[in-house]
Structures are given as structure tokens and as C-alpha cells.
Image (cartoon, rainbow, N blue to C red; front, side, top):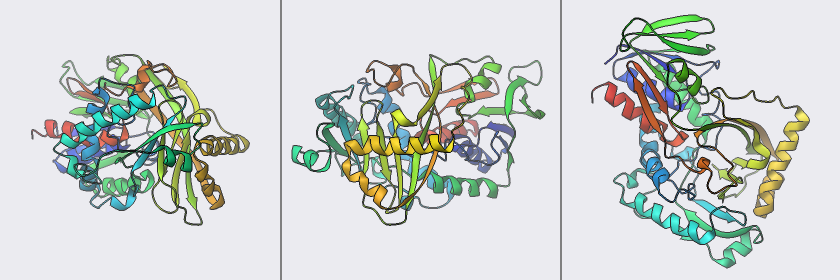
Length: 403
């Protein structure tokens, strides 16, 4: 095992990898341009612990098969990493997937896909380890009367309740940061943007140097690129390019804390550029609406610049988000009535894939190219989704530690 490791990125993937390696005996330096760990995308997202139900446009089930192991292991591995239970940080109810009238996957196909995924989940040995024992819970199709009673039936044409949960990413982030700072073998190098990784000598398996805007760091026995939107550009500095076309998208969503308790279930509108709601408890709610929250996208190695938002622009996005999703789910009007304090936050979505979510054949509807690439002493990890990061980190760390 390398004794000196540089981990690039202090989100959930980089932090999980650093913790596993440090506890295995390595000295780890974690680099990030942010001033503190977990400041960006890993902090500000819906925290969906994917079991594959979202990716019904991928009828091969490769996306689901890639997501299920990490989703099932998320709770167990995260609790190991942060040293405390996370049950109280998760949504207490199952998700309800609502098929939009403009879904790129028809309702009958979506229902059949859900059953196929449920069979995969149920047969996995880790199924009992999820937030609920998945061997004892199956998806349930909503009846027409339920749709008519609770949703705008001209928009929502079908629904399926699935045993899929999400975690509130802000408190999870805070517990990860505490774990990082408590680990003596981890050095946090914050406020330091990495610009390239170079060989530190003639051998491709030899030590590596990390170039930053402040100067050169190292040498390191091993460098692990666990960046998110910044990963492709650093890979390219080492001669590694993405395996296929890719897309950067910057999205913002609403993180609401209400003064009054509200009873709001968790919903996902599928399949296409719609939105979702995550109710983590009686006062903490996440709301997204894709047409309002997507600020910019690009397909170059480096992501485009995020546009600055004025206060009126931010207020307009909040209103458009609430209006967009409330049209489909009228009961969400209760969120406005509960006097919420709303933060508009977001982050990058990086994915191997391109096209529009309104196109069934767009490769953005897939998450089947999650990968770990190694060139000598350099390792690049594409985590694909938040929910599989601890599982991928464990795999990489176990291999490097010879376990």
C-alpha cells in the first residue's frame, strides 16, 4: 500500500476514500478548491439513495444493476464512516413515482420496468441492509381513484409507490466533516484548486506531483482523482479522456425549512425533465423543478461558468419551481402555507451521456458507465451518483490496502 496519497476532491467520494485509506494506515492529503469539505454538490442535492427505479429508459437494466449494490450498501458504509446512525436523517416514507403525461416512457412500460428492478433488488444479498428490509416490501401501483384524489390527473397519468429513500445531505455532510477532522492521518488542503497531475520521475508507476494554483505539492505515491465536475480536465492533464461523450449541468433546487410542521410525502415525476420532492421530516423539504432549476450546461472538459443570480432572479426560480411542481401535485401548496425559509442551492451534475431528457433515446437517461480507471500511480473514479460513492470508495480502498 502506498504510504502517501493525494485525494482530489472533498465531496462524498473523496472523503469516503480518504477515510477508508487513512484508517487502513495511509497518510492522505485531501485537496479541494472549496474552503471546507462538503461545501458543494455533495452538500446540496436531494440525497436519493438510488435503487435504479429512475432509469426506466434504460431497458437493458444496466443502469439499475450498476446502482443497486451501492444503494443497498450506502446506509451501512456511511454509518461506518461517520460513526453514527443515519436513520433519522432519511425520508421516513417510500417514494411515489408519478408518471407525467409527457413521460418518455409510457406508464405501462414504466410499471413493468419497476417490477423488473424490484426482482433484482429483492434477490440481492444486501437487500435487508437498506433503510427498510427490501425482501419484505414490494412496489405498489396506485389506483385511478388515488391518482384522481391526490394529483392533477391531466398531468399525472399513473403512479407507483416504491421502497426507495433519500437522506438529508446537509446533516450527513456535517457528520462527514467531523469524521475527516478527527482523523489524524488526513491533512485537509482546502482553498487549493488543482490544475494538473504530473509524473514526478521517468517511471509511470513512480511518484506523482499535484500542480495547484499555489504551486506544486508532493511527491505522492498515489493520486486519486475523486473530483466531480473538475475530474475530466485533471484526467486530461494526465492523458486520460472520458470513455464517451459527457455533459455538465448546473442545477439549483429549493431547500426549505418550515416554521410549522407539514405532512408532505416524497414524490418523483418521471420520466423526463420534471422534478421531485423529498420530505426528510415534518419541517425539512427539498423541491426541484428541472425547467426552472437548470442554469447552464456544456460538454467541454471544463464546465462552463455558472451565471450569477440577482435576488429577483433567485426569487423567480423559487416561484417557478413551486408553481411547476404544484401544478402536478396540488397538495404541495401546503408548503407555502407553512411559512418556509427557503435556500436556493445547487451543484453540478456530471454524466457520461448527452442529449435532452425529453428524448427517450438520449444517453443522459443511462448511468451504466460508472468506472474506475488506473494509469500507474494515478486513479480516476467516476462515481456517477451520490448514493454509490461510499461503496465505490470501499472497493478502491480495499484493493489498494490488499484486502
